[in-house]
Length: 69
Image 1: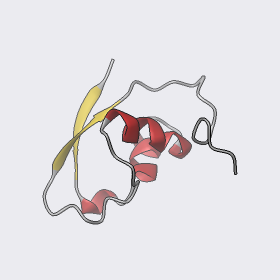
Image 2: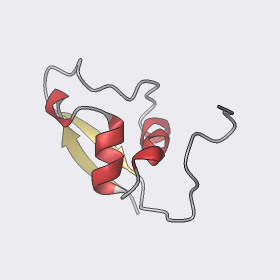
Image 3: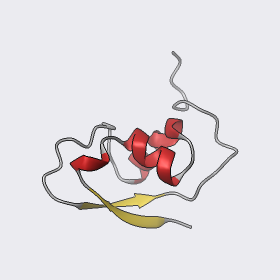
Image 4: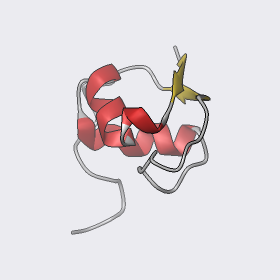
């Protein structure tokens, strides 16, 4: 089940949002994919915008799938 929240520049980054709502900052990419975003930085937001969040999933590993460090 997804949840929709409103975020602003004060929320910092998708890392912060993922840590707060999904319990794992490294899952920021799941939020980005769901919202067609490619940058975790939220500092450019001028007004609150809706952001759809995926359901928390403890089976997800850390890091972005398909991207090697």
